[in-house]
Figure 1 (cartoon, rainbow, N blue to C red):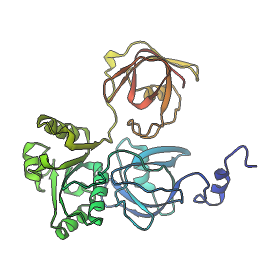
Figure 2 (tube, rainbow, N blue to C red):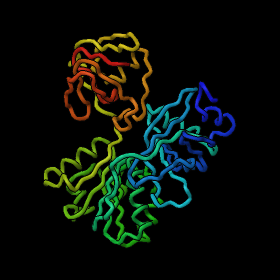
Figure 3 (spheres, rainbow, N blue to C red):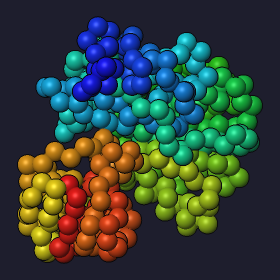
Length: 345
């Protein structure tokens, strides 16, 4: 009876939160606590199945008539009992969705939402010692972990180490200080890379680790932040043979292939378009050719941009691995062509 559309397409004309299949969320509170972030409290529809601290969701927002999807980690405790989740979004200079939300999000806004996903999460049996390290907007998943642990009455030792340029750029700074003052087992250290204030100064190094958690070889560490911080912490753990005690979540775009390596052509067979290989990701090359494939996170997390490579060789921009097998599903945002490539796009 609803042909040609799904029933939800008609229901949303009356009430965007009245859905049969689609998972959506309504913004119930908006807070702008730093110059470049916005914190949203959202109330999901009945389809929401909850999340584990550290996981992410895909949020869909309409900007200039086009729906765009991005991945954000809930920052609230997984035990929050009012059915809502909290999302803190940092506006990046080139971030279409993040800048839109920072400027225009208001109570009553309805966004699309996915179920929670991701393997960055605490184990069911909580470790006796936990080190949480974050930088910039990477604070959200580890903030969720901290809030969850405290809601559970966690009695082990936990250190929260966060990196920011200056004090004014630390989201949740007031709450973190309050939590540290009320919980004897929580140690808070704020490291500022562009300021002499804070507990630590400059970028991550062995001295920072010794000051924050000299016991880290005995505990478990959870890390989320910008590429430089992630790389430095990984190198430290690998050098000590502690790689299995480090758990990471990366919310940073993949590195583009060097333009000098680009050869051949990229054929988007479904669209009947062929372009010279520029060396950029296949998603970027498709967009440059005037195509509009579906995408979400642009970081290789959500798999929204997956398409079939019918022939040719591609390089994974995160791992460097090559794939020359035909008829393989690949993620366009983290794959670059090596020579001639054909895609069913």
